[in-house]
Length: 406
Ligand SMILES: *Cc1c(COP(=O)(O)O)cnc(C)c1O
Image 1: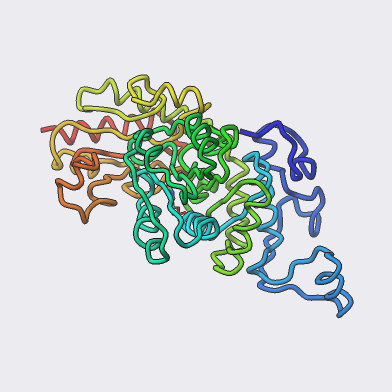
Image 2 (image 1 turned 90 degrees about the horizontal axis):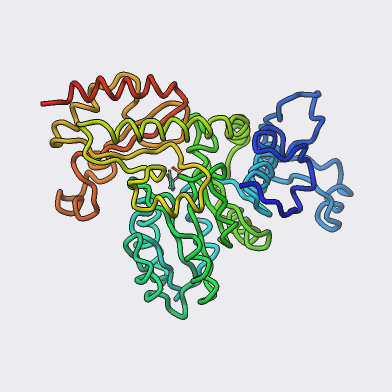
């Protein structure tokens, strides 16, 4: 998680080594405006120069100064530095959403006539962007079934720019073998991008496997309160600089207030992750032993097909548990409708427990056959645990399962 290797950022403003210490303090000056304990929200779109000499000191002599909101903001800068230190990256850029982070990063890295490879259970909008929008600019995209490592290797062309995957993926929590990715990337001189939203820097450090760029939807665990959208891109300074340059032109920047909420959320990141990892494991074990549950998908369970990879490359397995319930669509609907604590809502990683039905939400526009080909059954449920007591979540599921029988 937090890399031993010193980065430029590590040396500055890091008062301790532990993940909770870093998530509370990193990136901040010790004394701030009006001696405030919290980082102030600098709610401004532009910044004044004292005089023309000040302009020239900034433009010609490299004096540090904020110029205009799209190019940076002091509250954002603290959030960005904290995120880089927490994730063990040389540098970081923040975005207005996870999708803004992903699309800007891809656009910064590809050139016309390039080819990219992505796995088929990536986030739906990421897949859509890669397979349809990029094609308009002459960028080819091969989508391969998750786990088809041989297929990925065969799909590599001289013009392949990068391999992109998530790990764990949604909704089956498939785990990408990052050792394999490192070897193949080295052998073919490819770049690698990982969307690590589901693993978080608490549970996995893709940089340990030589991954070039890591993206997160900070909307989920990093902000953690189901109240903002934000995106994060992390990597080596020179690569992140290229992405930052395009970001300034595309303009999907995070605003000062949102940066503050992200900072505020990050302060409890380690506490929340510890709880969510534990709760998800308990809920997964409970579900696995329940007679009305057909199958549970959680990488922390030995029954998960990628449990061995997860154990080797992760320190915890996250807060999302997917499961198939017995019966039909009718039973799945009755189960969801009977819940009293868990909210029926998309998203994950926040303090409230959310539950969703992929077939009705993300895949509603496919035919049943198309959905089943993708493995999205009528009875598949995705649970994203919050920080409530695990016993209360289990009790809610128990009573709802009871009502869904028959
Ligand atoms: C939510 C999510 C995204 C998109 O992030 P937004 O913040 O909603 O734009 C991308 N990838 C994964 C894995 C996600 O869960």
